[in-house]
Amino acid sequence: MLANYKVVVFDLDGTLYEGTDHFDYYAEQLQQQVQVEQREAFKSDYQQMKEGRHIVSVGKVYDVDRDIVLTIDPINFNVTQAHTWEGVALSEGKVEKLYHQPLSFNFDKTVAIGDGWWLPFVTAKHYGVADCYPSYVATKEFMVSDKFSLTPLPRLAEQLEKLKEQTHIVLMTNSEEEDVHRLLSHLQLELVFEHIITSAQKPTNAIKHFQDIVDFYNVRPEEVVSVGDNFINEISPALALGIHGIYISNSRAQFSHSSYSIVPSVMACFTR
Image (cartoon, rainbow, N blue to C red; front, side, top):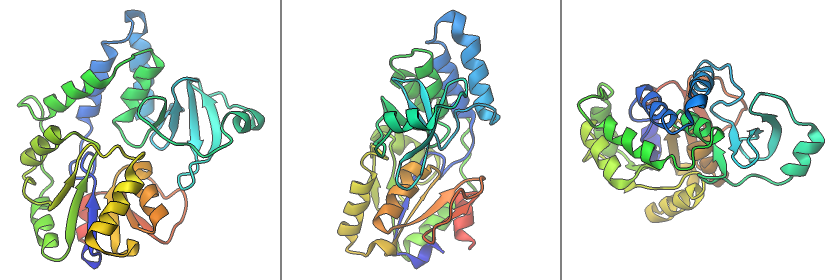
């Protein structure tokens, strides 16, 4: 399937390795920054999110200033529903008044909850944590330490090397350069990618990066495919440019589109 494209753009976190222990570690680091009397509530909310029993979930957006959880159309980013942290729905009139334009995302005020990294982050913001970055750095350091078991996906390196003989493969990630190279080394993927974009600031700069890739390789958008586990970061911007998308998720498709498909793991991309 992937060899049919002239360029394949991979995400890193949640795409080229699996597991969720690092998300829990991140949550524990952030929990320590919360007021002592609110730490149990933090823990309870986060656990409910993981179990699918909270209004906050992957695919939603969090309005930090208003403490509101938003449901959006994943293609045009229009808000379709809004709820309080406790799950109370805002009226249609209130939603229209507050969110009458498509959303634009950042990492501070309007947070796209695209994958498991963002559940602890949003919970921390709700409980008043001003700066989550030190906890993120601590988690990335933990992930390449002897205390953390990050097992490379069997045969992934081999499959990527074979794919590289047939097409161009690019890595585009929000992670910083030092973290990326440490992770790639740990995953035995350090020399696989011919083009690596770090600190990509997806989804804010995703379309620009995709357009740069199209221009650099002198290909048509439909000859490129984006592979990732974060729909808002990796799939929606690609579709907007006419690039194809492969969404890594165990969930069912929430809408149909001729240019994207869903797989449960990146390894499934090599068997179709």
